[in-house]
Length: 325
Image 1: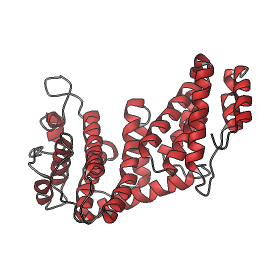
Image 2: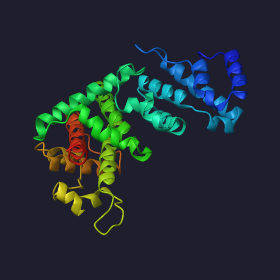
Image 3: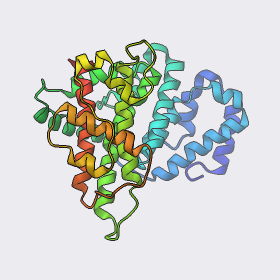
Image 4: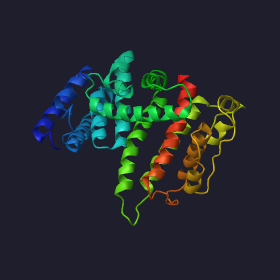
């Protein structure tokens, strides 16, 4: 461990033995390495200490570990994972922090740092610098979408009030929100990787996985809004959604879900309509979900950004129609 020395860990374990369950927050505030509000400082070491401490506590007394409130360490693990740009862990621990808050804080969980992170509440939030980054990315994509959609403009306030606040109430849909934010953050990472890649090429794995992740968010959102087929049975695959009467009433027919190559998907993008966005995203979801080895169309990062923007467009079209309007 780094910040937590051996004597300090031993002291923490002794305190944990006699810790009343209601004092979990005080315990972790005392024995956690914390994080810096205005700068990044040794996030790997801090993250490691939190995980190691939690593992030691679980080994010490698993029953007490499961009962004590762990919202504080889970939140710091998420915050530090964002600093490390390890967004999968950030998503996992943020959801864990909110789940702990729901379990222990009752209806007040919505006002605690985990939930406020998802509602992008910057004011006096300890992780305000991370929230500011997400808000800037979101605002950029909303402004871009508003310029091409022909719809009433989406605002960040409307996005949060009508979309985010609705989905975070249910732990099964809360992940859609955090996954959307992470999709925005990871796009920056993928562009950097493409711009710095070897002239002899490199693995497409991170690019394919990111586009697949966006397609999965799209599918999850549609299944949430259109959960059953016309015969009342559950929607199991993305293609089922497009044949439901309710989807066709909201949008239209003509969404394609199959493509032979990534180049085919890219070539078919010729406007900013929802049909183009839905088709590109559905094709990417199905294509990238079955193979990591595809034609390399990413000799320029612009091609990747075009596909990324179609996924974001598809998500905003659904959000505007099914949540905000």
